[in-house]
Image: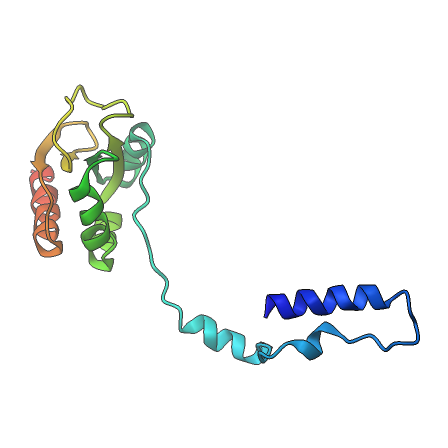
Length: 164
């Protein structure tokens, strides 16, 4: 369709020099029906809103965790980590996970190869999850890739442990 429209516009511009030939308007060439504005809200309602985890730098996460009385979840990852990417797609984008993290945690993502690792933690296997109180006490370090159900259990356990 773009080719037809482009050719039509090119043809019309060539014809402008000769005013005796009628100009073909580009909208006449178009085969598709335009979107009716009244239908636009309906189309927009059908699109699901996908919430994502808002990862913050550690210092900012600590500040917010103290204000909101939440724990910090540090996700240790690496660009080359296949299981990190798999877990991002299969677990970390799930609405229940996003909701649980937003409710009880402030999330940090650390690339173990590129970023400074906070709390004097050492570089570890990826993915790994470090749960920290807002007083910077490490509650648990959990290595590995998890299913949605297992990860929800880890979040619950970390929260309970952090509240002791």
